[in-house]
Length: 105
Figure 1: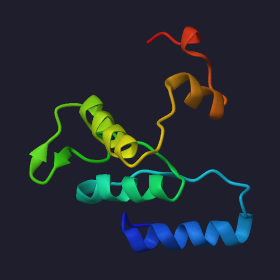
Figure 2: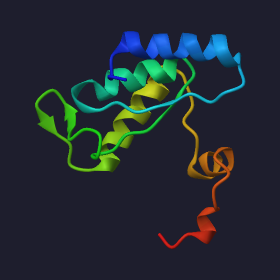
Figure 3: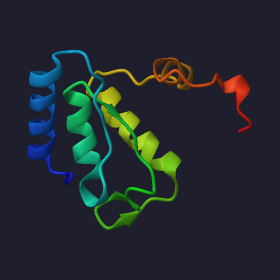
């Protein structure tokens, strides 16, 4: 599915119809629409992720310097819209992953 806002809304509406509230929406956007796509995903209740593997840019015509720069930007957007960002520990618990004390990075 392309990183198009209409596609994301169709995807969400279809999931709602098929699964009710028994699913977890997660999204990532590839290319120039990454931040807009992820902002909408967050607004409709989804989880988001960013990374240089999906987009090399931080803004129009501006290359990102790191994954951390992209994370900081989407976090700032989400928090400015009044939503909360999960801590690494909360994300690990939600996804049933190893604790931070059990990884070597």
